[in-house]
Amino acid sequence: MKLKRRRKLVTYLNILDQPIRFNPFLFSRKFFLWALLGLLGGVIASVYWLVLEFLTHRLSFFDGWQVIPTMAICGLLAGLIIHFIGDPGEIHLIVNNIRFNKGKLDPKNNPSMILSSLLCIASGGSLGPEAPLVQVTGSTGTWLGKLFRLKGEDLRSMSIAGMASGFTALFGAPLGGSLFSLEILHHEHAVEYYKAIMPAFVASCFSYVIFALIIHLGIGPIWDLPSYQMLDKFDFIYAVLFAVIATFVGWMFIYCTKFFKSAFGKLKAPIYIKTLIGGIALGVIVFYLPITRYFGHHEISELLIQDFPLKLLFAILICKIIAISITVTSGWRGGFIIPLFFSGATLGLIIHHFIPSISLSLTIVSCMAAINACVTRTPMSTTILLATLTGFTYFIPILFASLTGYFLAPRIPFISSQMEAKSKNVE
Image (cartoon, rainbow, N blue to C red):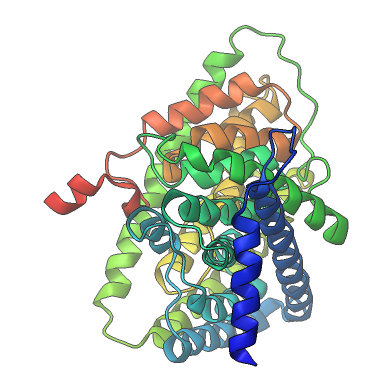
């Protein structure tokens, strides 16, 4: 029976390899393959999000002092999952596999990534679901590409398209999610993987439709900023000025992360002990500043609605940077893009206290753009993502801020796998 099934599969694949006759349109068989990948990515992202929302709702019952043992236990369980099932790696590993492993993302890491990240994110860690989604949907692209016997750049493009479908599902921005999946792979030549642009666009569009139909998320702006009209020609200068300040905060985050990475690196203990310690530290921070709990998807809206005093905003900013750094370095799993947006929004509110005459929306968006571009080195996609997420329709100030953060970023990137292969070999 197995031999007959294999023969049938080979027959079907041979049929699919044959050219479509009498096709007057530009699209080909590959279009349907990209669309199928996008549909699978949308379904995977929807199921992950539903489970995450369920667990988050259940664990949110534990607040006050109870949040400390809750996050400690979840950290311990996540560490045990990683220890016994396998280390799924982080965004560094994903970028490395796309660049140096012929674009292949191994699906065997998915169970560990899914289970550990659900515990880490749902309990209140300062990391978001973008990294787990990218790992799972990207590896789905690899699996589908292998199934249809794709090789070389075609297989790499399928992996990148899968990553794009995961980004898009979370951010609700097909264009921004597609560009982000390409831009984060290489900080110096963003068009290195230009062959994957169209697969990423197609997969992202289909993923967006499925995710929006199931979750009803991503339709319209997620964060409601005050309306903005560019009436002053100096707004570009203000955007650059705010971006310089935000880039400085981005440097602080990078060096804070290096400090905790060194500290946890010196700790000769199993991964579950490190995640336990990280959970306790995060629980203490959340106990004193509850708004620093979770990755910021809903908390940014809360930040904008409530009128926090200046001293409290400074405390939130500093503690959030520390919380993200601890989450990243202690073995907790997730992505840091939306938490960085939260830090940028907090910094924007702080600056607005000193310069209330300038638009609050311009201040916040400029800081959010610069800090993310500084850390992830994705100025183009950051501009489009923020315009979609905030409803800030004037692209140019965001672009100025993103480019400022990008060009003032440290020479050695935060995501080490973004470095040139030659530079890595020298080091």
